[in-house]
Length: 99
Image (cartoon, rainbow, N blue to C red; front, side, top):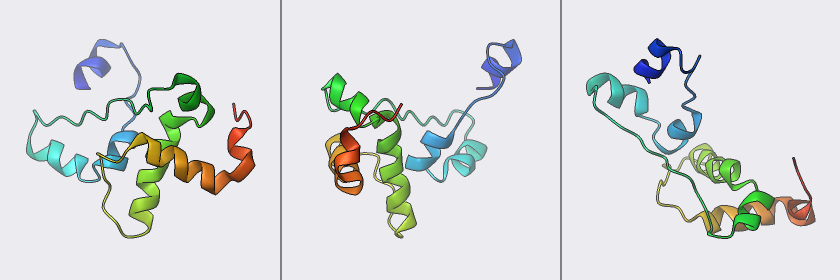
């Protein structure tokens, strides 16, 4: 991150997604300069479904909801679970274009 900022390749680095699966990220990074948190990209394997449910966002919303209910984040949670939870929470609106 520091290299990207120093080189001017980017103006800022977002860490919200990483924090949603690793809330201890700042402490871990401060303790170990080589610490890495690779959140990857959640996918069901069905591109249209991923796009319809905005999986790039809803997967991390699922993690935040877990933390809000007192549970630890689960970086191994299935993207399908995020789709089902989003579908149940939004009802028929889940099938409408959101962006």
